Length: 523
Image (cartoon, rainbow, N blue to C red; front, side, top):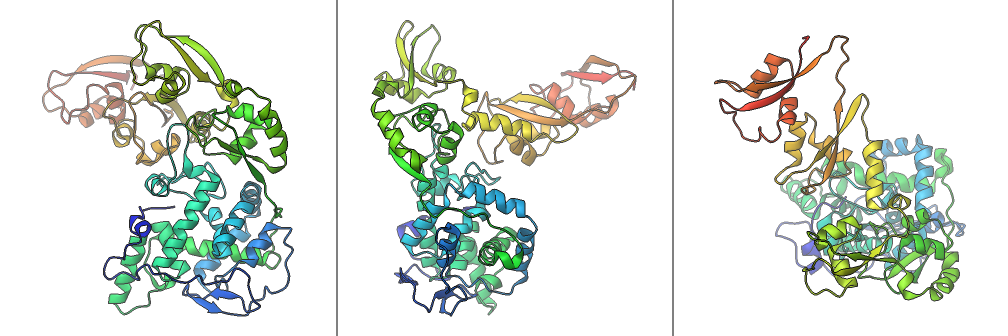
């Protein structure tokens, strides 16, 4: 996961004083064609020359072998952290199968980009560590996509993020951004790829701080000697363990599903915004496959402002181009006319038709936000019902909210109000902030919007044969507190807050204040 904004790296500025190294024009450490003396990297992450056991010719019909042939790190390090990760992967064959099934769409492109940049082949396995090749992966730290960019770092690398589109999930753009970022990091750390990987996970500042700390104590400053966050200490060993497992699969008793060493997708020009279900039909391809090749699209169509490109299965390019050429330009999305009613505005109309105010302005040549009752608007809309777009952001979220139900819980729905926070809502419903965010496919740091619907899973009350619930209107007395009232009536503080959410926002109760309680009168 990317945890910091790499502005210093992007600008090519020197490190702060006392850091491990300053960015320098370090020469590439491997030629584009390898000699018999294959260049590797030592256990400190620095280049070294070593005769490897992989000089025998590999079957390059399998992209995994192409990746192995590009290895440059020393993965034959004897370290308990690597052994621990290796043992986990060895015992989870189903995980390895799942990763290969997902990665089949993206691995050829990633391997190709790594070769062009002369980056160690092991880096092609990094999306396994980051996301298990799930293009829709979203972490508690707000990182997204197979390379797990956080929003700020994604924007620094030109990955557009808006209602229609999230470039962090764009396979081509995010891969190119991640490799640029990693290359910049290894330059900052004087060609040490292990430190670069650690910085990719925890931030260059975290790694520099650990290096300064060790230097002051006279300790080594290689990756294995640094005191880094727990996640980062396991991060590099995971990558090395995967590289070992891939190279020596037979030795470790696992099977790696082969992936054809040929392009999986082709890039097509759509000439304008297009409904993804329409694109699937033109390409004679399942809509689900279109979404998995183009996971950056949040909605039912491509971005109205472009770029007007799609990835489709490689062998479908000719038929797509042919059918698109025969399709009228105004038939790429469905249009419907809408007569503006009193009280309407662009935002409410956009929400009703699953689009955005900007898209309405563009399609109707509006310069401002003012519309009048009786105006006629052209509205781009989906060809099919919203449920057909199963990998759009709303449909993914709906499935996730149900799939993450804990056992022995019941569902309630909360409508976010202005000024609400995750902490406040979680406290009022007696749940953890991390749970509340996870149930709703969010991270605790994500912003909440008024009117947003949140799912809350609360524990079911234990059944009682004689339970009789009555509504009580309680008048607060001097010295009362929520805890005292809850204890008196055998209810929870969180229940009182939930029943009176508009009355208990103040820090203190006021004598004479009225509270609604629901009491089991048999207790």
